[in-house]
Image (cartoon, rainbow, N blue to C red; front, top):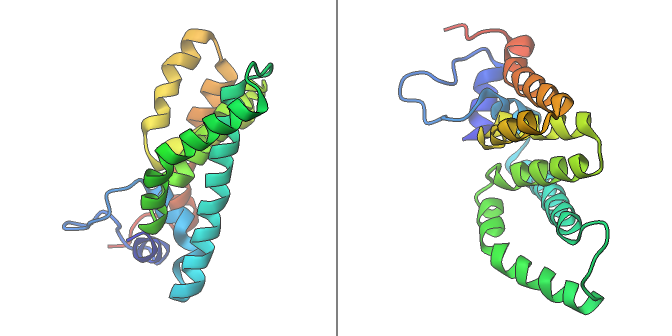
Length: 178
């Protein structure tokens, strides 16, 4: 569905026409545009590479967030925890990858954004979380936390990135012609 509607969007069509099965933000069609005209197999390979990269980032960043700056677990305990976490989440990640969905990419963006937040990189954190929110609104739930904690750079960057990503299709291709 993403490849088809990326082509529709890039050709100036209305991705939200009556009866359209495309129920996602326009950013998702925009992100898919580079592979929209590729033949089937190269497009699947490119999408698979993107998913593997973001799966790796999700695992890496989740792991770094979970052990913190001063790990209290031994190396063998950390390996057991990692294996248990991977076994619990494998079904969900594999399902998203096999159905070529955005969920792995969104998870990677969220965990990467939180990792950058923990490393005191507010702008990078806001950009990553804003890109995730542009795919699905769930990362916007970090806004009340950021506001409560006084994380103004993160708040502003997340909001600006979210808005930018969802208005980028209009900047690239204009409003629908039909």
